[in-house]
Length: 285
Image (cartoon, rainbow, N blue to C red; front, top):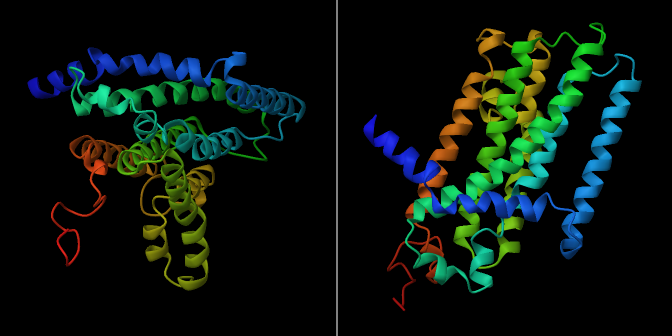
């Protein structure tokens, strides 16, 4: 417990890199004209948010709260890599990485600080999404959805921890490459394969083995959320416990990937990239 308390204090409470939270807020939640592209995207997001809220109000109970969680998860899938793809690779490109490395902070503090900065933006999205979700929950017709409060909380838990996992993976690849766009392309490619490619292949190749298909698609948050929205599709675990393994797995993966990133933070400076030191081919150069 003492060690955990020390980690919490040094990595979260007293982390000098907590300034990243302010930087993320100014960069991604500011309408400043000096950041034209970000301001434009933020305006479009706000307009879409307003249209969503108005459509739920005018739907007269035809919209279920689970729709809001699906949209939130889709938004995290698109925005999470965009928030962090340049967090480390961008520092290298701007020639500010060396100054950060010689600062009186640990590699773990650098990684966790950038991760928490992105999580602060995620929290804003979640809090904003609770408003239309509450409107839908209070007005929706049970004929369109029977989603209970426990299922909704579990869906939110899956969505939030999935976003945290994508943040961690994006940081990992940003630490492994020298160009931000390379990290962005790699993470988006991985998400496309995991969320779209794998289910498409499995739907054709493993139609007869439901257990095997469910196991291989366990990491797909949309499938897990859809099952929570329709409890009749859940088998094995009670409906109120179904989302717990997903949440724990996403959290565990996030911690492992963040730890791996911090342990090998300067690994990408070598020419070997993902290969171990000394493994430079037959020539040994």
